[in-house]
Amino acid sequence: MDFNVKKLASDAGVFFTRAVQYTEEKLGQAEKTELDAHLENLIARADCTKNWTEKIFRQTEVLLQPNPIDQTGARIEEFFYEKLDRKIPFRTTNAELLGQYMQDAAKEFGPGTPYGSTLITVGEFQRRLGGAEREFLHMSAINFLTPLRNFLEGDWKTISKERRLLENRRLDLDICKARLKKAKLAEAKAALWSEEVDKAEHELRVAQTEFDRQAEVTCLLLEGISSTHVNHLRCLHEFVEAQAAYYAQCHKHMQDLQKELSSANGDAFPNAFAVNASTSGVSAGPSPLSTATLPGASPPSRPPNPSNALESSTLKIEEVKPAATGTRKAKVLYDYDAADTSELSLLADELITVYTVPGMDPDWLIGERGNQKGKVPVTYLELLS
Image (cartoon, rainbow, N blue to C red; front, side, top):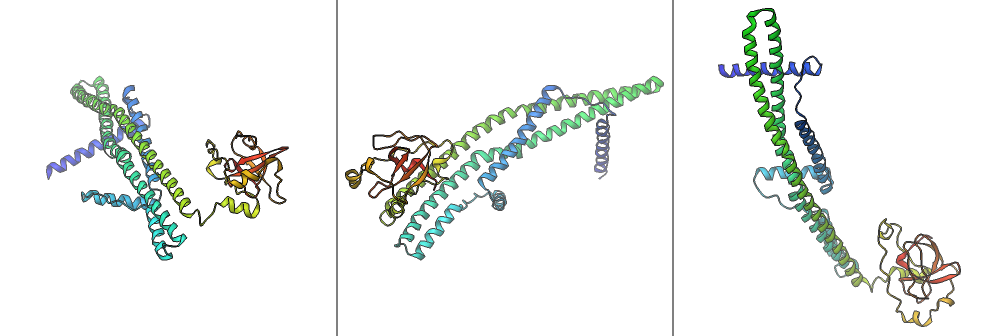
């Protein structure tokens, strides 16, 4: 017990002495040993790495789990499973839950009805999307988040511990320098202080040795930041690969869903353009918020040439007259080169007048620009009025 009390008193004395030295340095009343430039650069680089790694880690968590409540719950669940040394079970994604609700609703509405059968189909694809999302979250957590977390909770804690130790060794060194300086000043006044000078010089040599040793250890750890960057670069590539695979899967699932809905409901739900054309005489062109209008989007593929027998036998462009109430203005989204004399070439961003006529293919409209007239593809237009 006596030993512990003495050690506690000794530690308290060292802490107090260091605190005094640190305060005097901040007030400019004491000299401070500066670290060499190489070590200072390593420390600055390490701090930068830690700060940005932490920000990237947190924001990636937000990207993968946007809901803060779900994020907190997931962390608590991971903590308990980690302590129990058990594998974390897969959590149902929102898309999977939506798909399940759709399929359950279809059972109530009747799977044989158009709405019910469509709910079953869409629900199945929502579950596939959810499965792809779950796999993406799992791979991202293993290949990207875990290495970043290991650095912040492992390597960085070790580096921080050694840096604190280096700072204590520096404070001890400067304290010894101050003591030696005071002893030499006292020696100049009285020869009796020569013993104090010898003691101060010995303490200074010991402090200098410990400081140099700790500086070397800290330097080696900080130089390891380069290896950390290499490791995080590899993890970043894996994260991008997982993200690209996930979006590719989602795109394929949605394309398959569109094809399946088109083939399954084509008879029950005719082309929206054809319905609109038969009632108002004008096509419903792409929405202003469609992907065709996004910056950098590529033009859609050229629609197939009309094969409708009625159109090919009766439709002559020069004889076509606009309907009395069926014309609309349209903005051209992309440049279009006419394939033959029956079509009208288009320039992106120009305005033209469009309308349809009975028996015309729903993928095409009649476009007019001044005295020019010809067929134009619907997918190249944005209807304005």
